[in-house]
Length: 387
Image 1 (cartoon, rainbow, N blue to C red):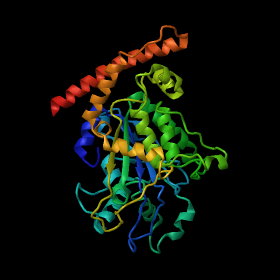
Image 2 (image 1 turned 90 degrees about the horizontal axis):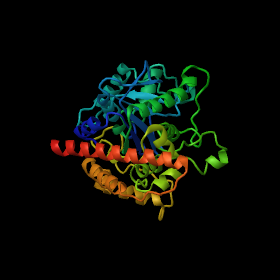
Image 3 (image 1 turned 180 degrees about the vertical axis):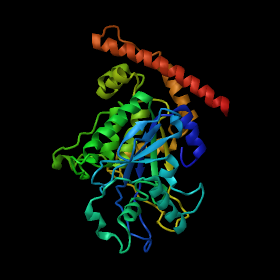
Image 4 (image 1 turned 135 degrees about the vertical axis):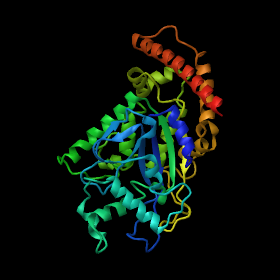
């Protein structure tokens, strides 16, 4: 998984509805290249939803009922916005590299061309920014042009100035609808003018929205916002940690241990409500580097830190494991890995005596494993037959 368009198209052929969490590195604009922009080493997060379209503008979403594999929207949360918790940018390729062709260098002309195309697409139509951000607007630049200038490489054309570390997780249409419903609900009071959006690093940042959207699909428990500030300051989600959490959830959950899954409340509710588990074939890691031939941004050694112990912290070791292993970076290897796990799960120990609730879960669990094993074998046969 990475910049290869064919690989993304192949993935969408198997999983037309999927979510991709992107942990984005810092941003460093070269001196003299328009409005000066720098970002922190904590980075930024964006949630891309394949099989989704904008619904009448950037504040709302709908499911792409026809040809879902060909459509997608990037969900970005930005402190600039005053009438939106998030804004949706349509089109995977435009979200990633703007108006650039594959392999094209980022020149001043291409930079201006991308902003012009973003305006023509109406990417920020109806999106209001807090007035305080216009204090750095250059003389002679319109407010609308300034909005696109300070949003590029953060809300669209991400590859212009940021490295992206990605984790994909397949969904189905009902679970994607749950994601859409959640996102539409949290945006409505701001888009309607009932409330003014105020970004908050501890209680309402870009990762909160992405995590809670995935929680609506049963991936994990929601991360509550509005917590006491002193508590939240020591316990808030950050991009690179959340990326690893998603890869762990999708690959490391103990599929072979029904008892452990039952004790995991989010996994139990996912199986009972959605008929599936968070651990599933198709959860893959990938990297999309910033464009190296770059006149606008400094693309060398872009930092993105973990909030973790710098020597013995578990996140950095898990990150290296996932990005070094074919089972979490290559679709065919991933399918073979899960096929083997499903085969061993079918032979797992089954308790003789269970409560009624535990027995109902066990029945769902065994049915899910059987379906997932058959589906994985079918996908693997298709993939290997096309090779």
